[in-house]
Image (cartoon, rainbow, N blue to C red):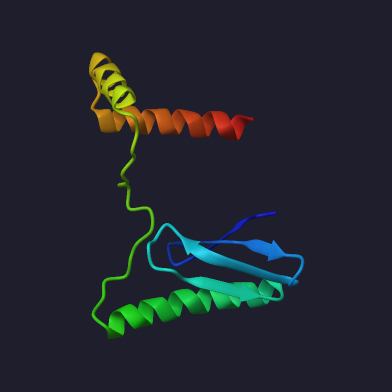
Length: 115
């Protein structure tokens, strides 16, 4: 089952609650909380689209810049020893720490997809 909905560059998670017999989800990748639900797939999709459209309209009416998901920057907190080791490994391979981490993430995703 596809666990995500896509609309206007936003992604929504999808969960089915057997107890409530309803699909629900939230928009991922932004700090603002946008949730949606529906008792059928079509109702879920409609509520997801409505949530995005209402969010964008609210932002426009209130002079707020809407958050964009996955803008390519995020903070990662790791142990200082690991930070040091990664920086040294990046330098030894002629890469910036950002490029080194990006390569490591890409490799991990490729390996995960192949499993």
